[in-house]
Image 1: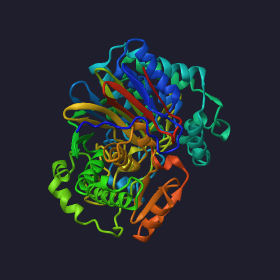
Image 2 (image 1 turned 180 degrees about the vertical axis):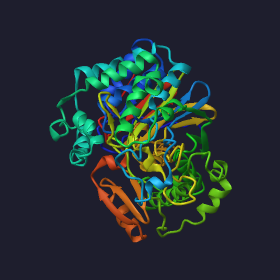
Image 3 (image 1 turned 30 degrees about the vertical axis):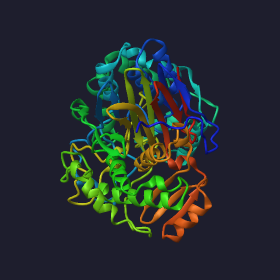
Image 4 (image 1 turned 45 degrees about the horizontal axis):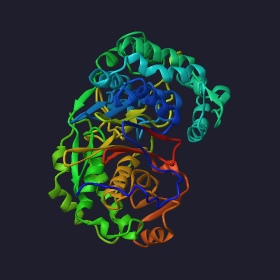
Length: 532
């Protein structure tokens, strides 16, 4: 069976429709970033050029979710699927003793800072597939940073949400970020112009040096010097030794659809494990908005998260192979644990800020994601550079003996996960849903919507979502039918509902259908899909 989705059926009223083209397509959570990608296509670039231009632009136009100091992951199809893990390691000086006064890794300050990998991802992907000059990919972002741009509504909401946290910070290490992002002790409002000349200057330097300045030149020296001046552990040696990793993507077949993810240290494996559990439950026999469909998906996700929390870490420290976690016999054993009542499970993951871009042309397709983790990250911004450093170290465990225990030179557990779909060795396309531990849950729901319920990409994104939180707690989008919410409660799920769409992630999809590229962008964000 070849996957064909209904391009004319839109059961959920988002007001959006799929965008279709034959040559190229691009989708991001911010329209100006999507236009940056289209500039690359119009200049003769390919999907990798477009994806990178969008990612670089997003460090300017959506700084609430990512920045120059982010990490990144990518999946690229060029006839085969390739994976890139550009997450950075913790400083070599970091030890578990640094957290002796904490129950969890703190959100702010230098302790959660790991080496930023996004710049290395830009360079590595461009070297392998880029057609345009490296510096050309930075032109839209530099223009937005220098000239300023109107802050989009959902980005403004996230910025305002972070305002109280950062305005009250008084330490020396937090002042540069406050000056750049919260001038006058306030966040910009929707429609207000914002720019950052320092950000533009840094992007010019990265572009001109092919990223070398960021890891081995003057930008690296500025990062290391600010760390030394403000009791940070990050050193020039940590930056110099950073290397992104080319990895073999992992996958599972869900019915006749193959879903691909990046292997650990990311949580993409959770989506695959949950799909393995669901596969034997014939979900399509139940209506999409039925109690049983919701219940079975939630329970499968709980079981996957329980294993992921226990075992997933930097692969150099994992004690259980990914092959075991993806074994379908094991999935069948886990499936047998699902009954009519809500199970008790724990995850403990946090909700973060992330950007995801999808790009495709006739030869290359790209699934790319980058993130600061928690909004503006650690709150550390290197003076005069616009480099806001991520707080990815929050992904570490502080439990003694855990494979993901915080320590020297380790990649932490990562929430950000790009995904890709194939069928019968043919590419269907890239997709992703951002937002902390909502991401594998979003991947699961999108895959189910496409495969079991035949939804087109826009409808698959529009559909009401659920999010397992912890224990028996489940967050439902307000548009979930009341009968489903009441039924889940009767089965022991502790139900909360919210109208806040960003709680349920922000997704993008490009799907190849009968030679056309069908693109869709998340209605819960400011996003835009364009195809030509």
